Every structure is written in C-alpha cells, then in structure tokens.
Image (cartoon, rainbow, N blue to C red; front, top):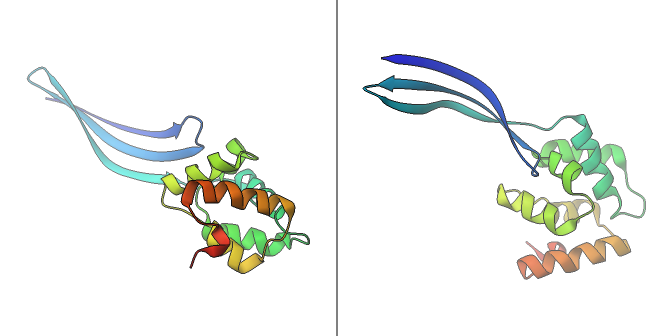
Length: 137
C-alpha cells in the first residue's frame, strides 16, 4: 500500500474564494483513493477588505470608512469577491449568497445608505431576491 499526504491551497477561479486543504492519497490493489482530512476557508487579505469598504462606501453620502472597515471585518468573510466583481452588483449578490452570506440587509440597517447608487443596487437586489435589502427583517 502506498500513502501520500498532500497539503495545498485551492483557489476557485473567478470567485476569489480560497480553501486550504489537507488530504491523503492511498493506492491499494491498483486503485487510487483520496480522503480529505481538513478543509478550511482562507479568509481574504487586506486588499479584499479595502475593496469591500470602497464598494459599500459608494452607497452612503458621508461614509464612515473606519466604521465600515470594522463592519466588513465582522460581517463578510469572502471580501475577495469585491476585488473580482465590483462594480458588477448582481455577481456580488450571487457570489455572497452562494456561500450563505447576505450582508446587505444588515448593512442597510446599520448604515442607512442613501445614494443613487444604492437605489440602483436595490433594484438589482430585488430582481434577484423579490425584495429590497432595506425591506428585509
């Protein structure tokens, strides 16, 4: 029997998501098998966070970027999506929701966005979710 451990980072092309995975390949009787032993999301770096803050800041007339930075760090894991997809609102909405994140209702409650860009975003959001983020409970 042959056994080989692999340790690698997998980056999902176009999504900006990365996973750190460790697994073991085994070969026995002419068959090759792979068993994942650990898999963890690699959180975004500072450039992703900065891109997320810049993206969200456009929705507020007088954005408090320090407060936004803290909020992003606490509420959005996959900020690399903003590096890859901004300003494509629908891709950002779909990308975050695909990974069980939807920060926009909470963002709306905490920051009271008020720009023309927010209204445009809300229309796209509504076309995807059948409600606006500022209407969610």
